Image (cartoon, rainbow, N blue to C red; front, side, top):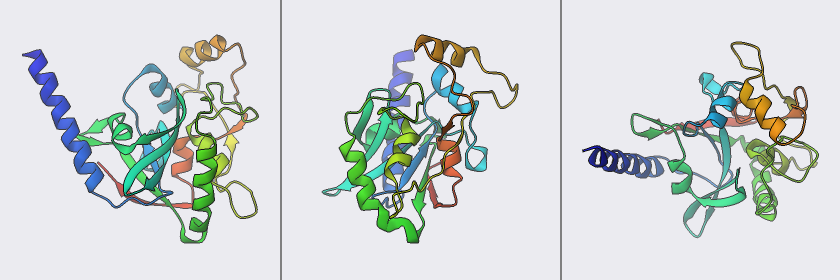
Length: 214
């Protein structure tokens, strides 16, 4: 019985993903803000960031359409990768069978920057994930990848940096998970170091929210 329910739940989620893909015409360069499935790591991210409408985004990726197929360019723990959009949606936390994903689109005056942004991200495919959120190394976390590659014609980032915090929004304390995380990598918690996160990026005035999948 339990196995049957699992199969049904998986099938329903797959249907929700298929409907989500067909629900809105994505464009190359669109940003997908996502609440990932639950894990200790994503919960820690959710507890220190806030996006539009108080959504706790844990990930952001860029849409890339090639030969009629939709992909996302993203930095995930395996590194900087190009993933089928179906794979991206499967990582989402669901709400009533629909993925918690929001689409942000650069405002018209910045859309000319998209082709070069795509080229920059593709040139970084295979780079390692930045587990320590260091702005000066050659590894990339999700929003860092977007910031590094989405540049104005003058070469400056479209999306600004802001001091990072690893303090829980409610308690004001650094959670034990973050303490253990940075201890594992033998480095200090980069509290106050300039950086980015999906929540802040989703609230940027440089984009317009054009669709919600849920």
